[in-house]
Image 1 (cartoon, rainbow, N blue to C red):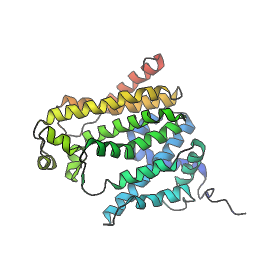
Image 2: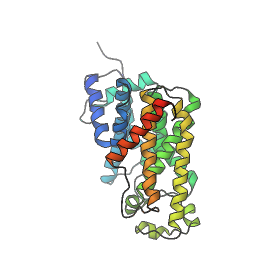
Image 3: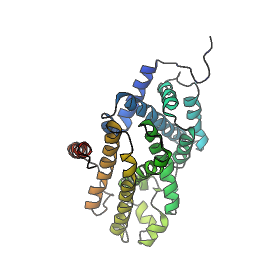
Image 4: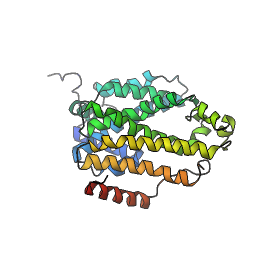
Length: 298
């Protein structure tokens, strides 16, 4: 008897979820750390979503490394398989788990489509001109993930979607500020050109890995912008189901926002070091967040 399209399982569902967990554990350490407070099935579903997002990113990187023209359609091939009947090839073992998650959590394909546009736009040189361009980029590569995870965590209220996008935006802005030097070496400048000019920051100096103009003031402004997104996201976090989903999201919010602290303390010195929280700092922050959630003060 033939299986209906989309119901093909090349690997047992349990093994498929295990494959997605492995992908997440290797490539998303902060999220993987926070995910352990989630109920088991929510945790597994989140791994399946991450595996899809990671595979979209990987296929774009592979195409670029081979010198191929990279467009959103390259990554869309992954989606066609993931939403269809893929899973019979090495590296695709996560797909049956993903389809199972999409069906139960009512995930919308358009969010993944938007993500492919954002990832494809990362290839080659990048120079965003304005906050509007940066905001669109943040939505595509991170806000979409916020929308996906909101559903995975059990919140279906469309009214909360802007807050999920706020959290994704804050996290992506944090990544951008942390990775200024690394991105500059690849000739990728995500910081808005008009704002750089306003603070007297020279593009060529930035690409050379040297701060110029009122760089410290510029970074202070950007850090404030990122922190504002985290604050805007908080009402949405409080609407998530209590317990693991709320705690995990508060952890992600707290750990990512925490990266801004050493960046600020250094005066925006991101050229000679890559700021991160130590394991001890993560554990300390996690304990504080857990206590606030437990006592209802988060």
